[in-house]
Length: 164
Image 1 (tube, rainbow, N blue to C red):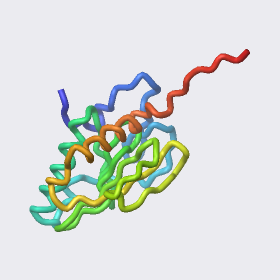
Image 2 (cartoon, rainbow, N blue to C red):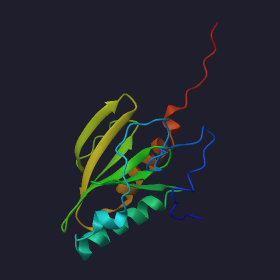
Image 3 (cartoon, rainbow, N blue to C red):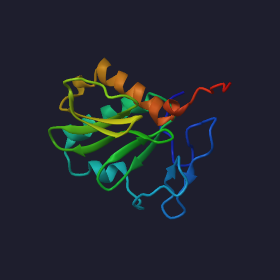
Image 4 (cartoon, rainbow, N blue to C red):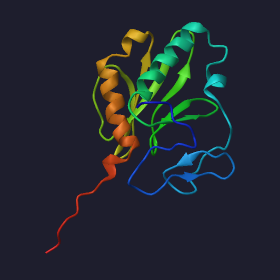
């Protein structure tokens, strides 16, 4: 059953539990993760943007939440979507567009990406813009599915090597 998870209902994982910040209660894969503490909501993020913007955001959110257990991680300037780590986010929402990103374990070339940031050898942030719900198509769904695996930190599994 897919449903919106809450901060008290983290994604299940065979790895160590998520660390919870004692000040703001946000959860992180790494203990003492650097962040800006604050209590923010999705409603605050979309407030005043208009019905078209809210519809666009809700359609994107619904698509992301269909992937599996996810924590919503709203911040002052964005809404992150987190499995163990944030794998996608809405970075900006205006009356006419939604700017978002996905984190992939590879740099993927596609004309729909407006920018790709290589933040580590295994984390590449792919930025894109959605102007209409019809753009939330199979291609975007595939990016989100792949990013969800990064959010679960599946890309960090190492094959054990046998030393002779």
